[in-house]
Amino acid sequence: MQSIAYQVHRTRERMRLRLPDRRHDEAFFAELCEQLTALPGIVEVSGNPSTAGLLIRLDPTQAQDPRLAIAATGRLQIVDGPPPLSPGLNAVRRAADRIDRSLEEQTGGSADLRTLAVLLLIVLAMGQVLRGQLLAPAASLLWYAFELLRFIPTIPEEPEPRQRPAAQHLP
Image (cartoon, rainbow, N blue to C red):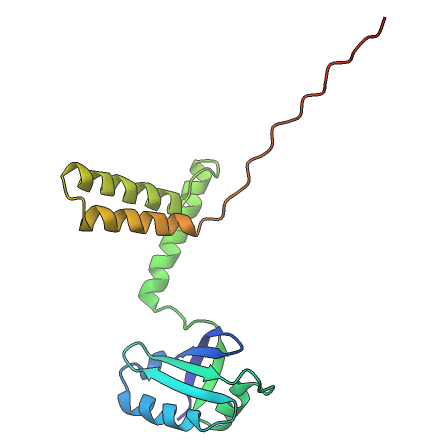
């Protein structure tokens, strides 16, 4: 039976696939790794049944797309993109999107769900600091807050309008 493999990452030297339907299937991953390693253009294959992940190291000098050789084995159908979310996660994502849009509308675009999450984590971290719990809880919360901030694109500030020099009147 052909398994669906979602290509979640690809460079000239490696490709990462996810096979969610084969999670925890150790025999499948062991056999697949051995079979794929023998294909042209593939240097090494490592599988992790616990995460349903497959990391394929590629020969960057090979011109042929390794997905063609992998598909020819009949074991995998490679699909671009991450695996679909479970129905439960889909519902959570839709609810978060609604809250995000509502926050943006109510604040005129000055805040969104990510802004709220960053502020909440900073407030929680400060609460931990005030309780004297400086190490794990406060540090973790600040770490999460700054990780969220790291992925927020910065918008350059608008430059102040230039003042024209006053007209000089010559006598």
